[in-house]
Image 1: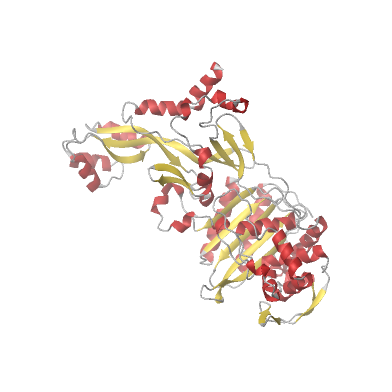
Image 2: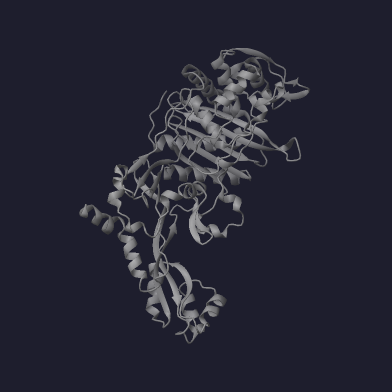
Length: 546
């Protein structure tokens, strides 16, 4: 027991004791900031810090000793930026012996200041939160900021795992050996839930996705662009992000608080034609259509006194279900919904989880707006069948689409792989298999049809990969006008795909809001999707499947 206790004192909490020893001679009333770490994990299982505590120095002065404040300011400001007015104001407090001037100095700056040997100028060690990846997954990681007088997690994992990541001043004195056996009746709980958070986010994959999002957003002058890369079988998220984003190391400089929230989790959108894949799968699963079933496409039709049309208003005549996906025909999706009937169609859509939260382990998840599915009118179900009139969060639609890829069951998307507690215990995320939405045979058939979309229809088949089967679908949705109706010139583009199609390793979802100078998602998102597919194939050395 003594050896274990010494291990915790000398290894686990050694840095905390060292920092406290440094401070007991300088600013004994000041608490030393400490906090658990957040990690990314690469494909080989190697961890890298997403959020950590780093050490440095802060500069303080003793105004009672400083006689030439202007001269002291000039010498210090040559080493580190210091606001002159603030410095001189503090330096002239003749009855004050301690004023803090600047924080977060590195060792080189500290050495240069020490070499000046200025009377009344002192350096002290300090610790602060640091995010080595900068903007990488920032909206999922969050940051540490003040809430009143306390530094706490704000947004992202920093917020949702506050109880795990926080460190209280008395924790280094807790009997951690007793905590290990707390289930035997030990009445020690302080600090027992503290630890480090290990994420599923792969830093190289995240970096690549971030580059694609920035490039796409800038190319089309979009309002915002986002993406998710997920394992459709397990729900592990390799990368997720949106642009614009922020750097948690300098979050104080942001002019808008909205950039801190995670739109992939918190916002909802009308997703457009990617919903047709869900509609078609429901029709196949219920047996009301087959891939070669036909209907007479008239270009437009009227339901409940409302007119709905294909994206171009043109009639196609008698066409099979495969062409509904190939040509993204609104009337074809509405035909499938009509064959299902309103009640059964709604049951399938709700079965995909569109009316529920996805269960993602990130805070503030928004709930999709699908009340139109409860309407008795046919028109609401018809428009919902092709992704208008219902608004879904990117995370919820990714979860639903994963069921098409994985054999027909709902997953629970998650970004936490495990939590390593200070007591030595590890809690590994293990999500049970979710409810079945469609049968495995249906999953195979809708996958085959979506592969046909890529091989023959997407940009006229020009992005087909000879050695890899890819199942994918684009979506273009009109953006709702807050004054009523829809904008005639504003669209949300969406895209999803998974591969290798019949045994998928990855599902990629992308969307961009209000791109300029282009109407269809096939022109904005196909190339970044294909570039992402090629990157993942090469990075993970995925063998060909055809």
